[in-house]
Length: 573
Ligand SMILES: [Zn+2]
Image 1 (cartoon, rainbow, N blue to C red):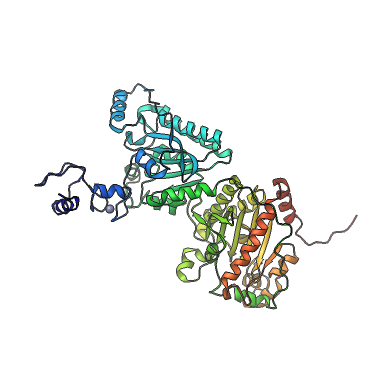
Image 2 (cartoon, protein in one colour):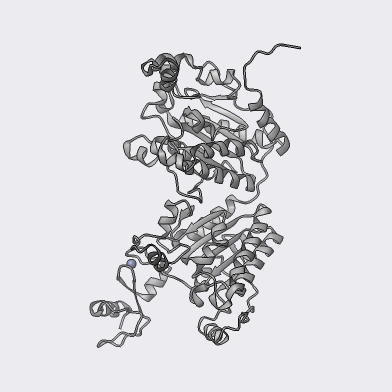
């Protein structure tokens, strides 16, 4: 009988029982021939299901897969050199039956414990890889898992290799008592030493990543990827429900929940996982920055237009004015967006990620304007909350670790003013960015795209060089706020705008900005592509020029740039 025919018969005969169990019926079907999705109950031929990398074609459910299966779909075939394959667990607290259980699982899974580690290549990129396997005691972390992870990090540190860990775990291994708890510290210690050397560590959280693994090395990846809809959390659902005496929502502790709350960078489907990891590995390779060009290919444009400050404000508030979302694909070759502050949430007002500018990997951090009500709601009218600033700082520090230049796009009326923002420390968040950016050991270039409002703008504006789009403005407060505070009359906004000295030329004059980027006549909205080209040309030149400074000179220049801003009189002698 052809497989297809068999499939038809089986499909019509199937009841709601788990098809992975023995099936009964008039046709004698091997139990492992079919797969029924536990989430949507769709039935597939197992062969078909395996071909789709064990992802349900109907609902996208990512089924658990073994470590060997994961290895096969992730790495270049034949490239794996396994570490510590013969290490097996002892019985540190003499837990009854532990040895027998281990022996049984070794036999059943072909594994010696819940993780395999080793060296491999992914699309030609060398790395150290570790993959946990939930079939082995729910991939709980005992001595062997802890030791193999620690050794994997140590070898990667020694060989200057990135580490990729696919996590799946129920947590610490109870059968090993306090010894298992200490594996959390051991793995974190090894991960920290690897990080101190400026090496990349990517975590891929798969189903389920919980307990002591979430609370240790799994959460410390430079980049945290999660498979869609997988369970990620610290305490189990039943424990929490028992403690708070309430039912939890369905999506609680899902990958999506973690992304929204700032703990995961991105959700990646299994079918694009290998490609994504390979791209990220390439983006984190150390590149030698090309020597600075003989002369700056870009000359500061000054006095380009005759528009009054108020007319320029109208231009930058034009709904058609390009936003950073328009510019990114036109300026950069690749862009991997990262999410979250790893503390509270993911702020839509600030976007960031790793991109490639020509052949130079850079970190992009940008305030996001919307052009319609939907976009504006998603980006909170470009007014960041504290978590937006903390996300920016997290990404900037990552750039520092990997020696990538940081490019900030400023476009905000100001930091969001509200009760929740105050409770989460809006002032502290802005202050910490200003403070930390001042000593960030990597080049920082900021560009004001439209409005640069107040401390909310400066939080992305402590930089080695500030460029202004030709019509952009940067001010201590909005003209409206200025009029209202100084003249108690907000309607004198236009008059305020015209005297505040907030145009690009004013800022160059005051030593706040160094460059003006020319816009197409009448504003960037008239030719976004041309505007993007001008930005790209400036950035390419500036990144190469500023990257040539050694760190000490770079930080001295940055300090002095702000140190010398100020206008005052002083008596001599
Ligand atoms: Zn399904």
